[in-house]
Length: 67
Image 1 (tube, rainbow, N blue to C red):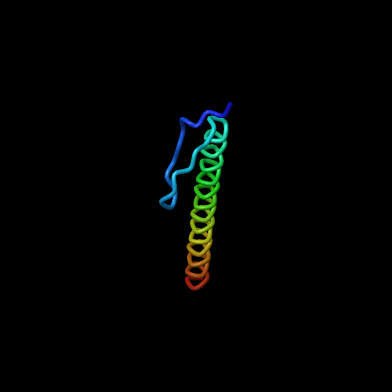
Image 2: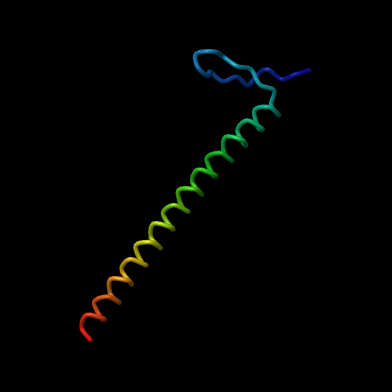
């Protein structure tokens, strides 16, 4: 028999889940959240890398002009 004790309201409709479905749904939601966070970290890392490269290039140009 399916356990209908777990329910969630989404878009105004109450949806009933078995305990297993509830856990799967929560894990899928968590996976999506982690993927988004990972993508944000990758983007931040790439932006930091680009800024570092731009700063290094500017310093190299400054040194070249001094010589």
